[in-house]
Length: 262
Ligand SMILES: O=C(O)CCC(=O)C(=O)O
View 1: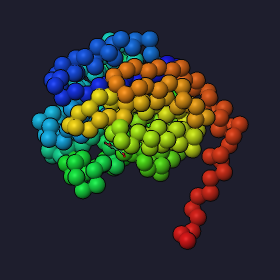
View 2: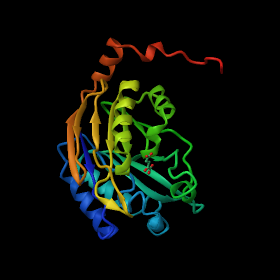
View 3: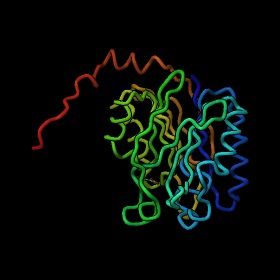
View 4: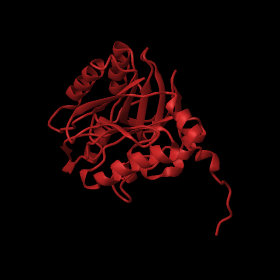
């Protein structure tokens, strides 16, 4: 199973509509992949808070239209990264979208852990409340977004629900790049899963992005890693490797649950 991560360079000089078309054509260029992954909030930029209201869209909005068509044309499963979603009550969310190869939206996931402490996303957006897994023919995806990467309990919940490939779109800042790379590998090792961590490149809203998207296998080996700018990385995933690693080194079996509070 071939996975491609498109590390989109987000430049605010590029109009959102142009970026949508450009990214859709990059998705179409990956027709030899089974699964294509895009980053967090690539239409607007994860730190372009001032633009969130303006670009907010319904679940069937312009990004949905473009990504559904691109997935169908390429014949791939597409994790289309995330958009600023506006729901029927006017609440905004950071929402990831997943499409099947026939262009149907297979799932959406509203980011649970909002970043910014008392600023930015944490004050502008509503919080998701539901972990989401998506069954593909060869693997089950567990969905998380950017700051979620710091919360291992969410990933354990996804693994308990059957996730074998954890997908993490992000807009991670360059100044904490070491955390990004470390946590992506840690989530793979501790959960014995593939991790597909897809960030953005370039600089937007004055925040230099880490880039360095990475594909990690269930033993913690890095199969592919991007540099800082727009780039596509790919790797072959062996759907049987998750089971093999869990069988030969059965750490998950040794979990001790329900310990008393000290
Ligand atoms: O946790 C971090 O250091 C970065 C998180 C972030 O940028 C985000 O969730 O948008």
